[in-house]
Length: 436
Image (cartoon, rainbow, N blue to C red; front, side):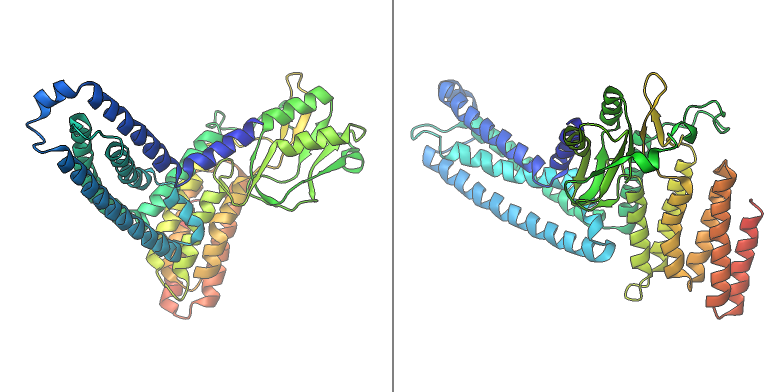
């Protein structure tokens, strides 16, 4: 299945081991090639490069051995600093945000270059002859050593700045924007679709709920991706209607209904296998088709910052600023219809989609519940709502924003003891109401 191949490739590509492994293999092969080149061009390299490396073959071997030990020490230092950084990031931002650090290509490239330099050194050291100096190989190794020196400086700068809270938020926001741009088209119509649009519930058979046969999941895990095109074509070929119950990001338990098929009198074995193959499950949530996951990451950062152990309302306010930016991006997209049709405009696939009110609830509920006693956080939440209001189009979207503003006002009036703070919050609430 294409969705399985794509999901597994993304998992491999984002793994911490992939880039270093590719670099190690490349430079190991390059080292063997350079030794062969030195063997064939020994006379030329001795005449033209001999002034660079003045010594005998034993000196060259000793130099390569010493540099290999240096590379090993540098690799040990980089690994130690990386582990400490991941530990601090896990404690400060939460274990779910570790995925963003593991995906950092700069850290993986720098670590891979040090490992690769060691692999190059190993290949040259144990393949060089007894009676000549591998001048080309030594020249390349010297260049790698200089490059690694600058990369070590870059690593120290990068690893120290990568755990800065603003940097982490910007990275999560960028991932969110990329996921929205990939999954949703830009809004083409400012008004709602006309009643003649085929995406409506009237095409669902009246007997669907009673006669549809459930398709059970064969395994447990988080739903990471669904191959909608394959399921649509599968339903068209078999002349049936499929309803997919979960959406990406939800947890599926083996043996529970994954989908429903109508009519039910179909080859259950083959069809169930194809539907399960078209839905990829994993042990964690990803941004492949789960936009809500990025919002959850920002919310987790805010809730941790509001905990009594940390008590950092400024981080929570920054998270709210990023959440407001993300929700505004969602007002500019064309939300997908839950009803998908084939080329003959016949209903074939019913999916569970996200909505703007659902995303607003995900973004604001936990922050409001955990920060209700912080006037600074609640004022920022009200200001964020006020910034979003002018961008929404439908009454339903405005209603959910108004609901959250009302909940903030009611909660603050009950929870905040200081009258001056309550008046300050009431003024912010009144300012938000003027935007509706």
